Length: 248
Image 1 (cartoon, one colour):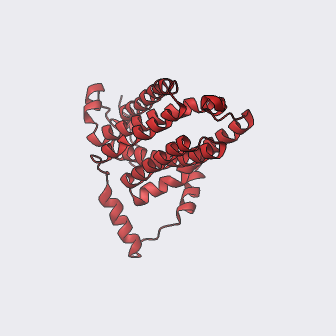
Image 2: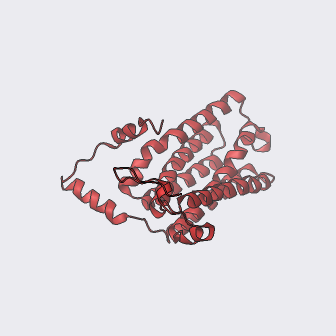
Image 3: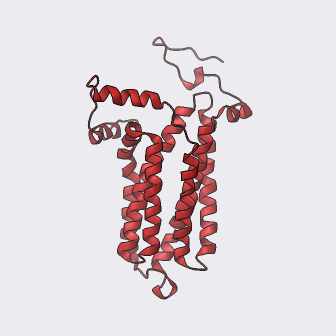
């Protein structure tokens, strides 16, 4: 059954012929697979720490843990969740304006610093500083990866692309805790050092990454600087997007 386009000639996904299973997979560009690899690496490192952090925070100091009480752990997790939820609202604009590759690189640096802070400063404040840095790094990472996928897929293969992408999330989230549970038998700090090493693999993947539609972004920047078009402040633009009913 063929859908009838509306009078304003707008199209929906029903108006676009969908590719079959193997055709959809084969249509995905190498940049998509690079993003999938970076996402899997990032989630592997993240969940290696995230799924172990509660045990680490409450474990006795004599066994290498922080020896924190539940109230302190709750404060840390509240900060972690809040930052990770709202930072992308503003960093998404950074990715659009300054480039996906640049923000993915910056986020990887931040996440490495976060893991190292956790390893080097085994105290409430040291771990909290690591959590804050890691949460900000995660918030910077997501828009660049997801923006790339949006720009490298079309209506005929986007469902398949996002399905595969989230499977890479699942694979990373499954492997991370398995690695962490082995490393913590040796020493808690080994988890953080290992995750810092794992996330650094994204530097290698970035060497083969090519930002889609980069020419259009650079042309937009040129027009803004030349005064041909006006660009709102990033915070104001982010708030306007946040208040759209469909997003709420």
